[in-house]
Each structure stands twice: as C-alpha cells, then as structure tokens.
Length: 138
Length: 499
Image (cartoon, rainbow over the protein chains, first blue to last red):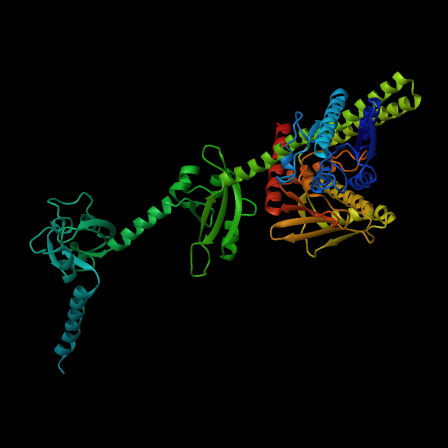
C-alpha cells in the first residue's frame, strides 16, 4: 500500500513534480502551497511523511518545521527537507534553528532531486517510522 | 652760585648716571683694547665670568689660550661698526653658557679712531635649551608641520614633513604639497590668511617619491595678537593608511557581494532546473501511460521554466553589468517623491496608501540617481506585495528620508505581512524569492549591491505579521570620497584619451 505524503512547497511546478513522481510510484500525495494550508491538511488527514520547502512566503518552512516538532501530535511524522538553500547536498540545519531541543529533520534532499533517490528515501523513512510506531504500539 | 659750579653739576650728574648704568644694566659689560685685554668690566660680568683683571677676553669668555677664530671685537676695531653675534662661552664655574654679544666701538671723539670696544652680553642659556626642546618637539611629532608666508612659500618645515616631501624650504606650498603651479582651490591656508581663524580640511598630495599622501590639515595664524596674519602654520596628520583601509573595506564589500551573488545564482538555477526536470519527468510518465493530460501538464511546466530561464538571464545581465555607481549631486527628497508618483496608483488599486515623508533641509548628496531609483523601486514593490499578502486593512507604505549625524537615511516601511526570522537572515545574501513562480529573487540582492557600491549599509527590522522596515544608510563622508575617486578616474581617462 502506498504512503500518504504531504508536499509543502510554494513553487507549483516543484510540488507538481514531486507529486507526479510519488503517484507514479504508487503513493498518495497531497499538496499545500503555504504553511497555513499545510496545517489545515494535517488536521484533515495525518500523512505518513512531509516533504517541506524552506523558503516560502509569510511563514517559512523552518518556522513551520519548528511548530511541527514542538507539537505533541505531529512530532513523530518524519520530515524530508527538499530545498535549494544547501550546498553539495548538505544543509547545516542548526544555522536556521539553533534550539537543540528541536530535532534535526530526518533527511535533506537538494533541488533538483533525483527521482529514484527521492522515492527510495521516502519509502525507507516511511517503513522505519511505521515499524517504530508498531513497536511503541505494542 | 658760581659759573663753575653750574657747569660742573651736569658733568658730575653724567658721571653718576654712567656709573650707575654701567653697573646696574642687566647685561654683562666688558671694555676691551686692541690687544684683547679686558680693561674694565661691570659687576654682572665678574659674577658670570669670574676675575678678569690682567686677563685677555678669550681667556675670560671662553677659557681659551688664544684669540677666537671669529672675533667680533676685532671686527669692530676694523670696521668701526656695531656687531651683534650669538656665542657660546664658559662661565666662572666651568658651565657652558649661551649669550648674545652686542659689541660697540668706543671713541674719544665722534670722528676719532676706535680706541676700545665695549661688549655687552645677555645670557640666553634658558631660552636656548627651551628652543632645543621646542625644535625636537617640532621635528619629532608624528605630524607634518610647515610655516608658510603670505607668498605661500614654506619658511619652516619639520623633519617628518621633509622626510615625506623632500627639500622644501622657500618653495611654494602648492608646488610641494601637490606639484601644482598655482594656488589650490579651497586652500585652508588662504582662508586663515583672510580671517585669522583656524580651518580644517582633508587633502591629497604627492610625496617626494611620487607617492599619494592623504592628510587632514589644520591651518592657524602664527601671530596671536589678532593683527594681519603674516604667517600660517599648517599641521597635518597623514591619513593615507586610513584612506587605504576605507578603500579596501569598500572593495572587500564589493567582492563579498559578488561571491554571494554567485551563490545566489546557483540557488536560483537549482529551482529552475527542478522545474525543468519536473516537466521532463511528467511528460515521460504521460508518454509511458499514454496519458495526454499528463503530457500537456509536463509540457506546460517545461515552457514555464524555459521562460523563467530567459527572464533570469535578462535580470542577471542587468544586475551583473558591474558598473560602478555614477554619482551626481542629487536631491534625495526628489528621488523619494519620484517613486511615490510612480507607484501611488498601483498601490491604491490594492487599497494601499503610499506616501513619502521627507525631513526639512536635506542637502543634496552625491548618489547614483538610477541606482537609488532601482533600490527604492525594489523596496517599495516588495512592501506593496507584503501588504497584499496581509489580510489586515488600512495598509500603508512610507518612504522616509532623513539625516542622522553624518548619515543620510532612506527608509521604506510597511505594515504588511512581515518577515520570518530565518528568512530575514537570508534575504540579502541569496536569490531569495517568496513569491512562488513570480520574481527572480534578485530585487534585494541588487538593492544591496547598489547600496554597498555607495559605501552604504542596508538593514531590515521586521516581525511576522508586524510589517517591515528596510533602511538604507549612507555616510556622507564615504559618499564624498567615492565621488572624489570617481572624478579622479574620469579625469585620468580623459587625459589618457587626449594623449
């Protein structure tokens, strides 16, 4: 069964690309173009994973990420940052969030992404998060 | 009273006066004959130089065993004229003593031969040592000091000055300082000659090895009485190193901006690449599944991103013209008002009030009018966008122009959506856009580049939901020095063309 992935990116083309790639691989993506709309969708249906851009109008991806990780409800949802702000595939996240109590994102993928790598990352993160939940459920 | 006593009394009086004068004047007096014998001396002389009876003048004055090489007394015997000379002797206790000797001929009758000379000496030992200290101070202070006369010739110059500018005495100051053939315009010394007051200015000169010397000079009258100024003293501090540092800082800032620009360009291209890759991917999935809708979607995406590439290249080319700001004296208020006229209607259509608030008496400043126009355009259009994003009513965008000390400040403030902290960290350093598909993210980067090229600073204050304030600050002193450099480069270019 495919994974439910919430894509948060203000750039419509990027969101469409990620959604198409996920759909083609049997997953169910939903798209939000801002942090506000992402929160609404979260309330409606809990995704297995969130793909998050950093630079967005009004509330940035970083600020949205911090809110997410500080909320009890959503903190366990794995987050993949998909952005162009890093260099050589690396993102020094502590440059953006110095607060050590906020955990680092599960993964960072640099734009432009490679579809195979993207899908593999998503699938393995969803699998390990589901396994972890099952264990805590026991 | 007899006739004799009447004629005798003045004679006696004259003798009494002569005697009193001889003993009491604040000079040491000795009377010397042609053979250098001291035949008479006053008490002051004896107190200073010791016993003189039966001795030669050179034995007493200088404790020598033969006549001095240059003897003022011999000169007076020969010429019959008064001689005044500086001399160094030895007092009765063997200490060196500086004195000024005034040697006058003594004759029996006005036309008679010189029978004796009278040497009156005044001690200047204290003055001399003070003069020496003064000379050391004059030469060794880490400043250039020159004294110039009303003809603008240097009559004195200290060691530091001579070291940098060479042999300068009696040459015109403008020739020495600047290798000019005529007086400099805006000469601070000329102002001091005119009004007798202290004047300061910053100047650039040429040293003896042709090196450029920047100096901060103050000119003051040498006379204190308030009468006509005969000489002016010029004291200057060498600020070449400071000027170089200032220039290096501006240069470093420019280079820094270039580096950040390249990083920003990479970021922007990544986004477009992502769109192109996306379009390609969707078209290929559409082809595989024979899904026409998907093919069309992918194709549109490709077209959009090709278009974006074109507009980015265009923007980038205009950004990377790499020209230096072309500074002109302009009225800062006018620049602000122009932008308000341009954007007032566009803002009003979205229910936003745009206005300029300009402080009174803002003086013209050397700015690149096109550059500042671009900066204000970028800031104002960003502010309008921020207001459009905000759901609040009564949106306002204000351009403030004001002065604070040496700094000219342009401020664009809005009460729109505000900026997140982490975005604030990045807005000036990368091609940042929060406008989705619109905008290339070059606006603030270009603004920062232009401000930096003016030697200025751009800052932002903002809280999410609270609006934003973008402040461009320009130090007038830096604007002036960039302006001067620019004029110099232009001059050099013109002279190269001519030759």
